Amino acid sequence: MPFERLSGWLVRFEARHQGTQWSVAEGTLCALSPDGTAVSMEIPFEDAALRTPADVIAHLEHPWRLGVVLVRRGGFAVAYVVGTAVVDAKTGRRHVQGKTKAGGWSQQRFANRRDNQARVAFEAAAGYVEQLLLPRRSTLDLIASGGDRRAVDTVFAEPALRPLTTRPQRWLGGLPDPKRSVLDQAIDRARSVTIRIIDP
Image 1 (spheres, rainbow, N blue to C red):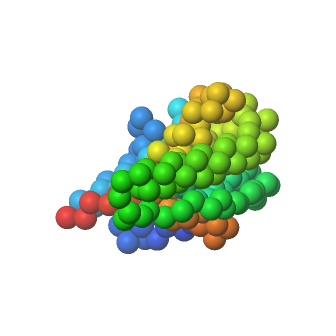
Image 2: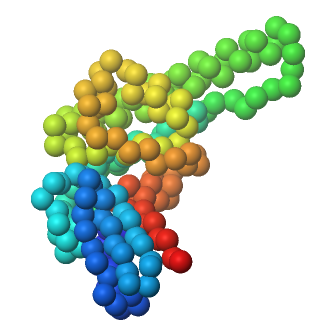
């Protein structure tokens, strides 16, 4: 559920479940209705002062500063986002050959070539992460990453990027090859909450 749609969802839920009781505990917004319907939602960007759904809505309306990093062998996307605005973004592709069924020495040579091409792609991704996000590391509220987990880990293993690993992290999952439309989807996912409903 995108942050901006949560307020409307809560209004509609309460209209269908009169008398719902809400509470916030340990970073989770919870609800229990007289008909037995229960709701729970983890609140991003921890804030111990939150007490009510209205507090949570106001909390999510804050212009949070996000770094979004997507990496796969053949491409990458990096963005710096403030609130709903994409302040800076870069997507790129690097050629990495597909797998081969050849055997023996040819297969090994081919594998080495693929590894070298992937390394070039990861270095390019790391360069843009350093350019777009590293100077803003002290103000980042969250770094959301996705794509191929091993590729992302390889990028953030670069010594220059280690300061970014101290910021709060969120894994967005195995997204397809990064391009602008995929990056936009990832940003929407990073700015969303998951609502769990138990309906008896």
